[in-house]
Image (cartoon, rainbow, N blue to C red; front, top):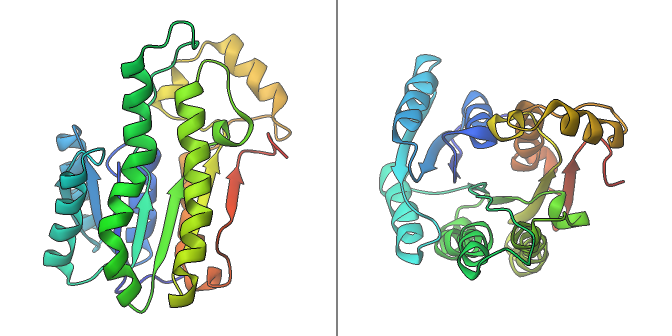
Length: 247
């Protein structure tokens, strides 16, 4: 699954699952633009890590919930590398609360980043992707968008919206050979899930057929596959990387 000479953007690509996606694409030969909002130090460290094994990457600060920032991200990518082939819409936030306690601001912030942000970056990247001769869009959704999750009405709605957006864009772009797919991670071992109590972790693990949380690398492998030539006949699909949680 060689991605040599392909140019990729990974939003939220400096930390969490995004870091491992960035690394995996770079290891497969892609030139990677890793977008970050506040994680400047992490972004620069990741660029150095990629350069250390002979890869090519650079970091761009942008708040993808802002239309103009998303435009600048794409413009800087094209100015640096001349084209764009792979877009991984990974950036996302959580701000959980039961709906009786959730504020309008909590709802709007999550929707604006996790759903509108995907639309913003894709809107600005679309023309170049369609002309590139090789186009892949991979949107990171969540099992919360497939099955819902109490206390996450904002997050579940946004991630379900990402799946709908993925299918609509897959139909729009199919005629030009650009595929659009989603990856829906389940419970993955990240800094966020490490904050869960052992009781909560054990309770969820018992509901997962594989009886464990996933690794960020396992999500990254799925993204790399969908970005590859081997996935050229897959579009409009949501690949659940969840240990069988929502089968």
